[in-house]
Length: 191
Ligand code: CUA
Image (cartoon, rainbow, N blue to C red):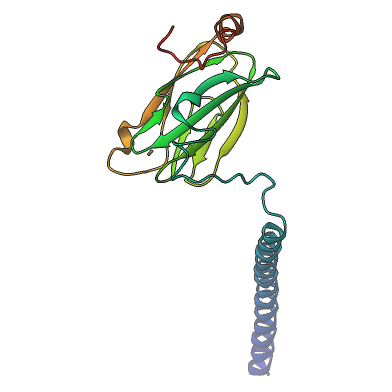
């Protein structure tokens, strides 16, 4: 009699344990299915909707002609008033090595690389981009205050990587516009 009731309790315990394990198996299975679904969805979405702005450039000829010739690098003010900075990265420097931009005005950076993947970040601002040979990277940012920032390369690009950096001078907008009126490319040197 006692043996039979002990067996009954053991069976109930087994049933409870099996039910709990089955519940966990369902939860884990659901998480697995969800993760796979997210992977499939994002993969298909990226494949069917590539990023809207892919701008290519031939890294072998960009120093000979076009937008990124040496005389066109640095900061300029476009006819419509936009401030545009053009930068070329190469092992192991940025051209130009010092960039002048205005504070409190939107500044559009356009950059590319002649050799390997580089990148840069401007001080503690949100200006942060990768420069990939064959592509033009573009972003627009506004510097809040005048001041000077370091602009280091932040993609490992070879043995000289840690010595690859430029400077960014943020100057008051009035001073910037006065200097920009000459129509030339602005650089730190003429300051
Ligand atoms: Cu260029 Cu690291």
